[in-house]
Amino acid sequence: GDTCGGEGFIGASSTYGFALDDDGRTAVGLAYIDANKDGSCMDSFGGEVVPAIWTEAGGMRKLDSSGFDWATEGWLRAQAVSGDGSVVLGETNYNKAMAWINGGKRIDLFKLHGAVNAYAVNRDGTRVMLDTVKSVTRTVDGYTYEDFISNGPLLWNPKKGPNAVTKIAGLRWCVDVALPPYLDWATWQMVDR
Image (cartoon, rainbow, N blue to C red):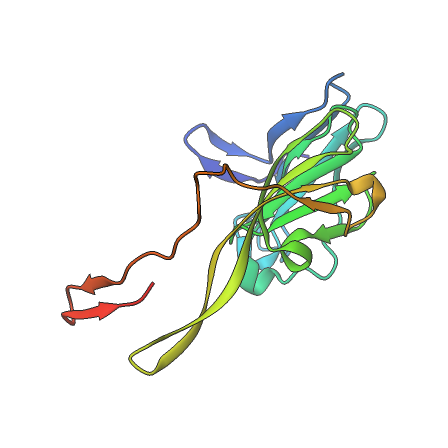
């Protein structure tokens, strides 16, 4: 039942919808659950904000989140669905793209391809546009850290497997360039991006 939910400008709701398939028989979004049984459903780092799917045939249920690290990733939601309802796309609190095919196991598109966004999918779920990043190592004042820069778009075919991707080239006059260093006003030091 709708006994608790996330609070927002419209009040509390146990589920929020994000997308609907072409026939209106599959809807996806996020749901709030009382995972720790404290009477509240707002602990996003405790697994209480979860991806959800509703189908006309099966009703509402939580999508697979096995292996998801709630403590470091926070919430997980479903936000797009193919026209036929077979492919669901989602993301985490920290912009890591996820997918579910035919309501099955969660696919971590960030780990596989560096995908940070996955919002666009075609009617039969054979084409998904992924916005990707790649890891770079930076060093500033002796401190080394991992950073991410754009790696461009990928076109993924979920029906052919998790690695069925094609690199999409950028426009010929557009080239990704590194950002120049900036002045940190607190230290008056130039900082590499």
